[in-house]
Length: 94
Image (tube, rainbow, N blue to C red):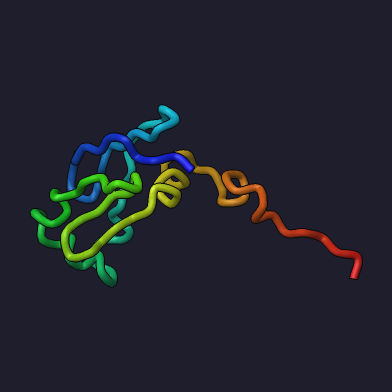
């Protein structure tokens, strides 16, 4: 899978990211803010502390992380089945 190689904070809950395949653009994470572990993002300093870990995922303080796969899907608008063809349902004759 593609790893995140660059990240920049743009606005509250919005980041610019670049992947190892060269795809790049803005990702809006405002739909996650305030929910579950993402409640911590309500403190601006927490969201602004985003960084890339060794696996190419985004991480924040308080053990918050988002895998690169989910962010790649958000950025490109692809479905999981497009990115991972083995997820397609297998038709059986039963």
